Image 1 (cartoon, rainbow, N blue to C red):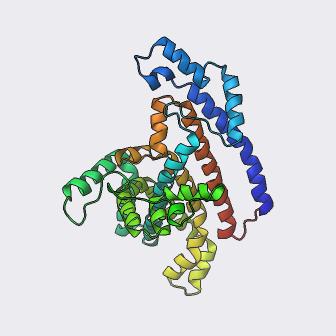
Image 2 (cartoon, helix red, strand yellow):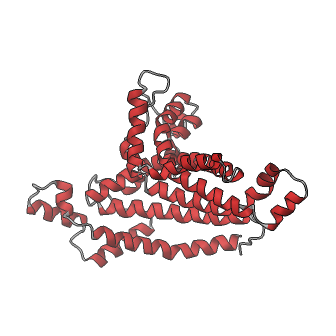
Image 3 (cartoon, rainbow, N blue to C red):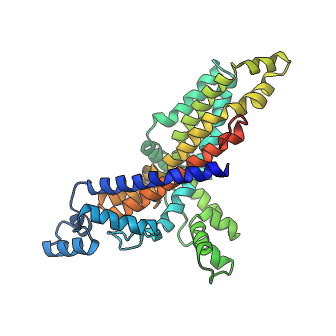
Length: 358
């Protein structure tokens, strides 16, 4: 298995280089003047010329790519043209927001989706099957921005001053103080990768609250995430539910399933003991692909609920032609996507003993 992992890592290198090149090229094809997008339409030619020279945009495209590639290899993703801040610092602030949202959404989507799929397959061609699939298909039938606005209005306005009221935006209530994990643990002098990791986890407020035993922060952060998590989970939930149902129905027609039934095992035991594990391979694939989609496609959810994460930052960077942010954020998302695909492939060997990774 170690040899397989090393081979996959080596094969991922040209993939990342290709993604870096395509992102660099496509970001340069965005129409419009970056100076006007950053400094406004009233910026003079002299100001724009100074801006272009300062940011290196006056260099030939190949020279810009070689310079950016050399810095990216060392972990330097450059500075934002719009904010003048290192992209790595922006990632440290905004990537945890999206990861927290995406992981919780995927957890909800997986639990609810697989439950609906199993129920629909167990009572195939019955009213229960039809009702569960109708409920599951609502996720792909209603656009996210419509569902998000309806949920925000319902729980923030219609249910206001009731026990069901939920905050429509933000991550924490105003005035709530959040300590970083190193500060709470008395490790202010910690440096290097451990400090970077703890600072990264500190931006995940639920994780932060749990690790620092600040249950008020953890509870309030979880309460603020209820609506965006439910809204974002609807699309992958529908896909997971349908994939679970179809995969389980296919497995239940195989010979070894008939053998299990002929031995006198009840249907529930046959489904959950013999069929479920063998039907998980396509479901795991969908779950892994859904995580990558949630990381990069949360722009609508983050915008509706006022969350400054990766999706919203990428949208703002595209509209303002902030090339450096587009390239850096896309590269990190691609890296996460490749890593998740590796985990999915490794899970195949765990779920199906017939698969050997070599």
